[in-house]
Length: 139
Image 1 (cartoon, rainbow, N blue to C red):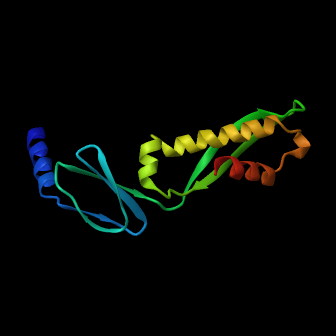
Image 2: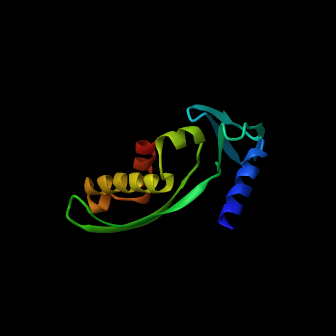
């Protein structure tokens, strides 16, 4: 049965000559394992076995930032949690630079928040201040 499924998948791969990229997606083609081309929304032809196509939604994503217990510069303990929204602008750059984008973005944000809280007194910390520091650091 597994052999039959493998043959069926191979035949399906050979006769699949196109990829559709929806308006809320972006994609890219890898030809012969080294040449890449960005694909905007629409129908794109592919050469079976030679071309690999990757399609990714580029809409806004929201992830939860895990709870953090941090210490301020005046030795007070602060517990923080939150959420973060991000959007993918260039799927080709995403695939070339990050393995797990959600986890990477979360860790970067947690690091920036941790550093900002550690450098400030408890009375100086506010949601707006942390948001501004994140915007400046991550962009």
